[in-house]
Each structure stands twice: as structure tokens, then as C-alpha cells.
Length: 75
Length: 404
Ligand code: SF4
Image 1 (spheres, each protein chain N blue to C red):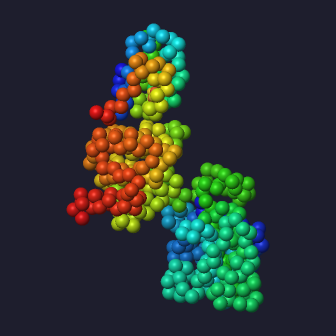
Image 2 (image 1 turned 45 degrees about the vertical axis):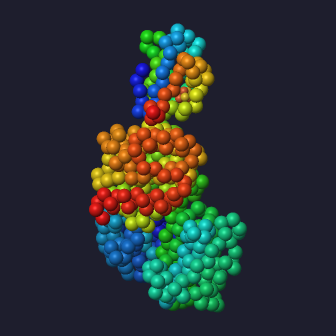
Image 3 (image 1 turned 90 degrees about the horizontal axis):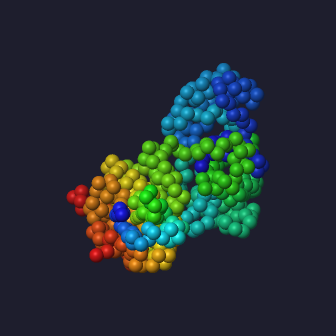
């Protein structure tokens, strides 16, 4: 997955085979960080990563073991 | 938004303010016809949105149609402050015995409109206030309560005017103040009001400016005056820098990051928050700084938009550092702003620690924002440092770099 300057979003492999969760991720993110991957499943949109509002909606939808929002400015 | 003299006078005419007879001419032939129509001595005035017309040769006199044609021809061919005249106002010329000054404007400190009146009109009012302060009165009025005859009379009487002149001048001042309030003007000025040899009192020149944001509320009036939506009435055309700033703001609908005005200084400003832009711009100036720009940021713009605005400002030729300062923010996130400006500086090829003189945006999500700033080595302060002090530090940092 590509990184932003400030934010990286890690998506666990298991999400890719869960179409319902993929749909929910696309739905909940207020700044369109998730998109459908060409090969199926979900990917992140590099240009939007730094817009992440840290709202945690993706984590609530997927669980923190399946989607992780990483602040690259923290040690 | 400034009105041409003929438009400002139309607003006064509708309110019953006595004016000299006049005609607007768009060509020299129309000016000649106007003189014939009005008869006798006329004054011809260039219709441009700037002062200094007399000095520039934009005001001439004529006593015949031929003279009026020649004068109009010269005026129409003469740009003033880079502006082509929109026409020539041909006006009856009276025999003026005394001139007065009247204006209504906004007093930012008193947070109320103020009527300024002088019995020494026709000249620069600042000069009169300096040299003959007893000839200038200032009378504050409410923005809410109805304007009264008494307030207008008080404004005039304070300069020693009495009798019939007091009553006639007060009527003009009252209408000027009403126009100011009802049309959301930022300035309504008549300079001079002329008292003619026969005792008549007329508004000889008028200057009015409407708050640009209020245009939408006065569509009908503006359409009535023939002012189209696209007629922005800016004092000068926008610079490429300002056009680029508007394009940044139009990128998306999230928040505001634009409305830039170009200046020639070396300190770029990314400033905003509820009037904070104006305060901070003034703070930089009063600290001896030389801003490269004015701008407005607020309402939580996207990182993309803030980055684009920052990139634009930091890349402006002559900009040595930028100061990122806002009032205490509640509806804008400090961390999102920090991301935007740092991204913009990096995208422009600079080191944020070196290029950002100071970051002073306290408010929501500030700890998160400060963590980002620490990571990039940017100097930041919280709300315990005032906007003025932050501006002073930014200016001092730039001066130290320049060896000043
Ligand atoms: S935290 Fe919110 S903004 Fe960030 S990726 Fe998740 S849903 Fe999108």
C-alpha cells in the first residue's frame, strides 16, 4: 500500500475476501481513502491518505486487527 | 465594491439629496449635447473608480458645446490609475461660496458607524483633521436603532454651523447615513457639499463603496443601476498570484484557503480564523514586517487545499519565510492545518523547519498538530503567546536571517 506523508493505512489480507466489509469501508470513510482494487477487494487512494481525519470509522467497521491507521509523524 | 460617481449620485438622488443637474456621456458628441441641454458653464468629470481625478486631468470645464466636446474627448482618452473612463459626467457648474465635507464610514474600534462632518470641505479630510481638528466632528451612530434627525444635526452643529444651513446640511447627512446602513456601504462620502452663492446647497461629488460580501443582498439595486454580476469593481485587475489563489480555493468546497492579495514583502502569510487574517496582517505590519501577501484560511480546508495555498505563497518570488498564524480555532483542526502547510513547503522543495518562521494555531486537535510540527522541527507556540507576539517573533526571525 502507498503511504501519505503523514498517514498510512494498513489493510489485512483477510479484508480482501470480505466483500461486505470492503463495501462498508468505502462507505464510512469521509475522505475517500478506500477504493475498489482493480483486481478485486480494496485498496487505498494515495492522494487522499493525508486527508485522513482520524475518525476511526474504518477501524470500527473492520476491527483494529484488520485495518490500522498509522500516524507516520509519531515515533 | 466602489460605485462610480454617477451611480453614487443616483443613490443620493433617490433619497432626495439635492444635486446639480447632470448627464452621463459616453462619447464626446454626447457630452456636447449634454452641455447644450444643461446650458451655461459645466464641469466634465471622468468616471473612474479612483481618486485624484483633478490632478490627473480628468476634470475639465466648458462653457459651450464645442468646449464640452473637446474636454470630453481629452478625458475619455485619458486613463487614470490604469483605468479607462466609463464615461464623462457633465454637470451644471454653480458658483460655490463654501464647501463642506460629510461621510459615514465604519469605526472598527468603536464597532459602530461614524458620521464625519467638516465645514472645510473640498480638500483632503485627513489634512483638515490634522491641521484644523476643531473643524471636524465625529458622531457615532447605532447599527440597530433608527437614525434620527438629532444625530445628523449634532454632527453638523459640532463644527459651528447654525441656522438654515444647519437644517439643510443635516437633511443631507441623515440621508447619507441611511444610505450607508441600508445599502451595506463601507463608505458613503460627499466631498464637497457646496453652498452656492444663491444659498442653495448641493452634493457636488460622491464616493460610495459597498461591502463586497453584501452584493448578493442588493442584487435588485445593483441591477437597477446597471451593474452586472461579473462587474467586480476591483481597484485593479487580479495579479496571476491572486488568480492562482482563487483557483486553489475553488479546488474543493471544504473550508476556505485562498482570497489572497499580493504585496511585495518577504514574509509570506498563511493566516486566518474569524477576522484573524486582518488582525494578523496588521500585527505583522505594526511589528515592522513586510508581508508578501494577505490571505484567508478557515473552516477546516482540506490538506490538499492548504498545501496548494502554502506552495503558492512559499514559492512566490521574494518570499524568504512564511508565518502560519490563526486565532484560536474551533472549527478548523490544528493537525490538518499542520499537515497542509508542511506538505506545501515540502512540495515546493523547502525544509519546513527552515521555511516556517512560526506556527501559531491553537485550538482543536492542537496536541496532534504539535506532534506533527515537532516531527518536522517547526517552531510552534500555543495560545499563551498572543497573535501580536507571534507576529513579532516571525518578523524578528526574518530580520535576524537578513542580518537586520
Ligand atoms: S480513520 Fe476515518 S478518515 Fe481515516 S481512513 Fe479511517 S475512516 Fe478514513
